[in-house]
Length: 201
Image 1 (cartoon, rainbow, N blue to C red):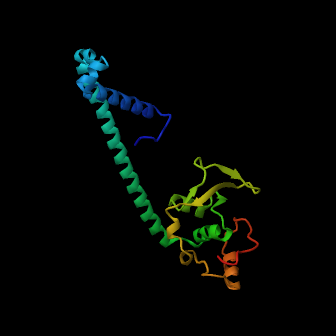
Image 2: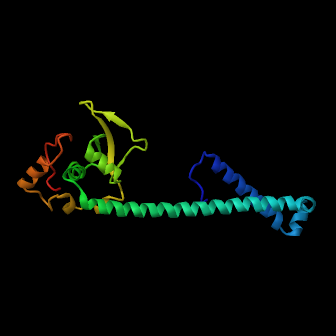
Image 3: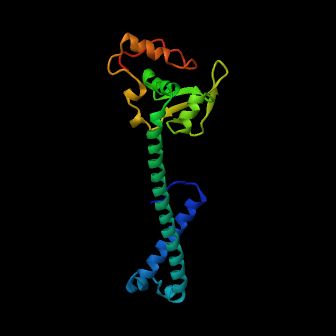
């Protein structure tokens, strides 16, 4: 079915009810006369056909409206995703050194998610632009050993294609001693110490 977004919601049960009403009314209204006589519903249809017809029209109209709403919402969602992708691509052109260092950390540590300071300016900026998103739907936080609140974040799927080694100032291939020194020195002080770097970034 096209509507399967909230299995426990009132709207879901209303949709299911209208669907079954429409199907039942359609069967009654459009079944062959011989079959109606055989199942002994011809007398019922003779007396209540207009009520069945009204129920069919109302339930069908609801289903059509629901489908139209679903299609419109999908189109709006796609448009929002497209606009977000364009905004993120544009935002990538103006990354600060601190923001770039945070994004590099995912590659340096070879991790898909990191616990980062919740109130740090560069972290908040990357979150607000949609480049970083919470791993947890509820955006849960924890307090580290220094009493700083942290949130687990990951690079959004929309942003990943735009994060190139050149944009993040990562070395191409095996990093040199100078590359390793630069990458270590450029890391923000609030990140966990990184004692070793992978041989290839």
